[in-house]
Length: 202
Image (cartoon, rainbow, N blue to C red):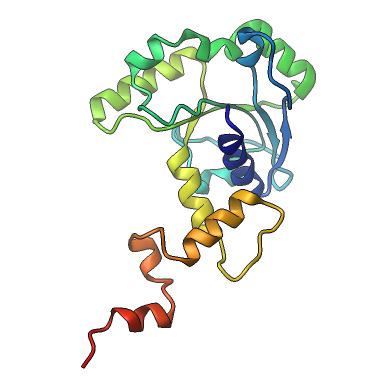
């Protein structure tokens, strides 16, 4: 997992009030070890889990009490059933031995959500449902797309704030300030100066 992808996931959960613990800060010497949990997250603002949709968004964050996060930051292709079937190492963290280690470290007195962070699921309904069925059959509780996280972070960014303690947020703030994020959701927040620029001259 790259440092940038890691920062996106961490900032997203911290933005929603979670306490985030990174599983490791070193490069694993073996592939098997590298396929374990990336983050443990804990939401101190809720005491229990609510039922969740399989694909998570910002609204579902407040319903999560505890979760383990595994990041698959390929950023090159959608996670179709065929791609998943050819990547068995992706699900190694769900094997019984791994789960026992997680419970020993995270505790087993309360349930936790097993979340897979992915680039994207297929858009076509049939392929999408096939991928979801495959992920569920492997024991994944929910997925969180990178696009969802980035869109939410951009929405939370305030251009008049200095995010000096986060290079990621500071970069998003600069890009948002210079209007590099076009789209309907930002039209409502354009400054008067920007609106005047778009008016035709008389």
